Image (tube, rainbow, N blue to C red; front, side):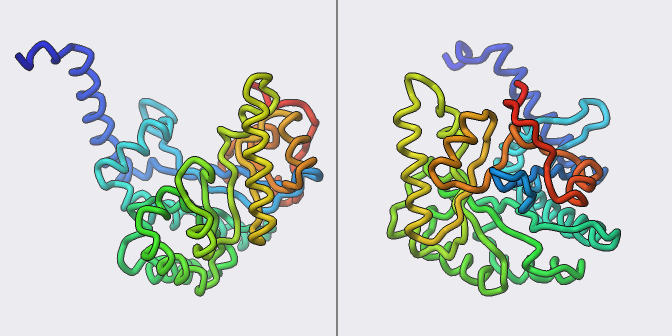
Amino acid sequence: RLSRFYTPTLNREILEQFQLEQALRQAFERDELLLHYQPRVEIDTGRILSLEALVRWNHPDWGLVSPTRFIPIAEATGLILQLGPLVLRLACRQIQQWRAAGVPTVPVAVNLSAGELYQEGLAQQIGDCVASFQITPADLEFEITESAAMRSIDQAVAILSNLRDKGFALSIDDFGTGYASLSYLNRLPMQAIKIDQSFLAEIGNVERHRQSAAIVKAIVGLGATLDLHIIAEGVETQAQRRFLLEHGCQVAQGYLFARPMPADRIEPLLRACYLPFDGADAPG
């Protein structure tokens, strides 16, 4: 009876997932994983304030594999516990190299998965890694999703407070998509909130603008009340940029300003300190 649910399509999907997992395991050994960096900018001037480190997989045959394909596999298989520390090491090494070359540096934000966040000794491991590259906690920021922080709030508060005490800046990613209450948010030792791009995507949409605009304005207001920096992600249009400026959000990242880029393309932008900005909407 179960055979009726077995299809060639399902078989192909299972095989593809297996091949992808095996290739990802080999990617660690073959140094196929690398970082791209997306600038966060001061919206009205284009001044670069920080960078977000985003992992990429450059497979020798497939080319760049989309993170939407391999990150879920890394999370499901536990490989995320290898991937997270690798991303941190690559980011620390790049900061060290830029500094040695006389490139002006800005803080680099690294994502912490839920699996990493609750690992024993996390703050010590991060501190040791940073020290080994002779950089400082001020050179890094850590982003934690709202859902990861809420999974075990008391534990998250203790772990994040430890990181904060060591001098690392912290932000909540994808804010507004989870279920954090204001009382929980107030307990977390965060310095910034990132407005999820799904809300900004509706700005300018005739049917959905009103609701999304209200949510964005509420998050900006919440940030002001709690003395938190607000970062808008996924900014792609002039309408979104104007809306954010009009409602008091000063920092953003997104295709309107710059796509994620490898380190060699980021370097001249860091030397200039500003992004060239033509005021046109991001190409699709």
